[in-house]
Length: 281
Image (cartoon, rainbow, N blue to C red; front, side, top):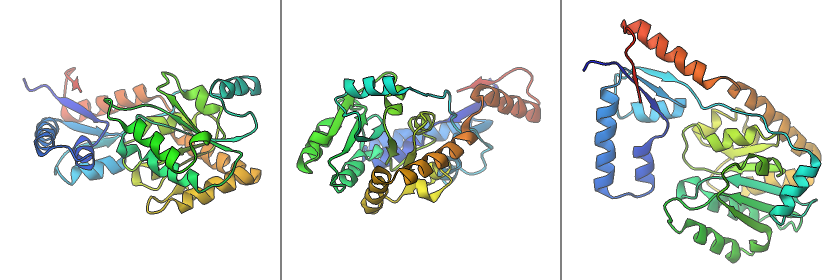
């Protein structure tokens, strides 16, 4: 039909399929769909530079634009609401709460956070895990078994899936995102909007958001993350420093995503002489 198509690329599905050890047939199907979709696109809009570089290694000569996800709302809660939320999840009022949020899958790497937390040896620390299984894959049972094996099950709370987790995240003291692969993670950007310090894994996609090494940790060993959590738990000035750095990173992602998308589409139309025909997928 010769209608110009602009494709918004939200995830590297082919890379994730390899990481999750999908069958060869599924990986081949992902590859075919990706090839056809991108080759017929007039412009590909990735939500991170890292994703662009990853996908462009497989597909040359595509036209690219970058539009990251954004911080959609700011979340502030008072002490009264904070105590109510903690009470609802059986969290002591004065304990230091480390939170994470994600749909459970191996890619989200929650096991790594459990391991780091198990080395803290701090009775006053709690781990709040928000999320649940993807496709009933048994990941929650595996993580709960690990918490029990590492003897932190009494300090760990699995909330299950929450439709609106932001206020629960805001009731924590620190958000940690240990994912091993991402695009431009909404869960992490939402956590940045919750007015608490945030740390993330030292992977390129997270590094584009957290442009400060103090807020990042490596995935080769959980020792670095353990040390940073322990310092945040025991040193209020360090925790405040992390919060200030997190607030600074957040400012880059406070913008109107819809307006930016329209600007990119309009710019692509003008450059290619398109008159009112876009098929945005």
